[in-house]
Image 1 (cartoon, helix red, strand yellow):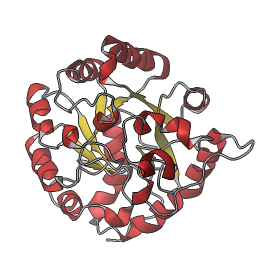
Image 2 (cartoon, one colour):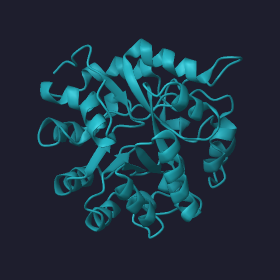
Image 3 (cartoon, rainbow, N blue to C red):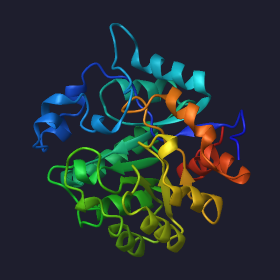
Length: 291
């Protein structure tokens, strides 16, 4: 059904233009081995995307730039990572009505990762934590014992955890993000709200099966242009999964909001799905008010 106009939108993955792609993605390049990943692409998954947004230019304020894009395309709130680079922190302090914090951590940091989540929770009121298993160095699988303190702390704080699942876009090993690993985590942490990010491919049908099985498991559409949303996820949202599928963009990493919003109306969601997908599910999972 056509996407209704004027629905409140919470973008659960948005960011700010950066001046240096090399500095931003150094953590990925250090473990890639092919020449193109190290030298030929602005960001390590560029081969998968068309019309990648430009980086920050001149004296442009990155926070103002993202807010302008949000205003232009009707995005009421955006979830941003606490990068502690001065930009994200300023956005959270100056615009608490527009931005929701997410504490991105590396489980290799041990207790320092837990301390970071707590500090971000106390200072910025973050409503989630996130981990990129394939991007950690060394890699840490979804069900690894290093991940368990993070899951436990999220349950204790009453916040959700967002984890990349499926074959990663950057040319990194992907076994650590196999969707099957989520099953063990949900068994051990039945109170955990777990949101998959970046597609779950090629194990999308398995992800749907696990969402049917585990009440706390959800799916976010991050890093996928709407025209490429997996059919199994759209079908699931239209039937038993209207409360489980959450909108997430990918601006400015690989997709422009202009492209996303141009393609979104063509996604064949049923009428009852749109409001939940665009905002209500995110508000519930993050524990924030719907705009």
